[in-house]
Image (cartoon, rainbow, N blue to C red; front, top):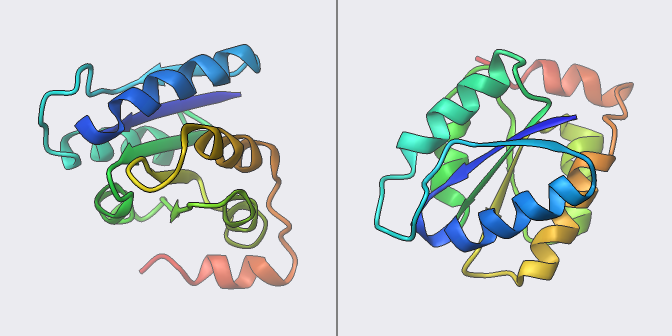
Length: 142
């Protein structure tokens, strides 16, 4: 499995920890930045990540910013992206099961690092159920 990660300055510390966590699980990771806590503009990182996931270079993307909203909004501008803002592991699981989400967005300022890791694990381990959900997912793109 290949996962690409990015975000903004508010998500930098969590991103480093989640990369280590994923690597311990045997997941191959790539980091599009940022590479410090210096203030940055999240779309500069969300768009390249979304493009890479959309082009199927990676199985999933993970974006982390302060609220998770900005990165989710930017990523969801891409037709092939279904970015889900999750602050509980059951939301991450449902985003995969019912929505075939391919980008997980985490709000670093509102959840603990341990909960963020639980969300990541649920997201990458949960398959899309298909079935009745496929028709709905097919209607998402404009």
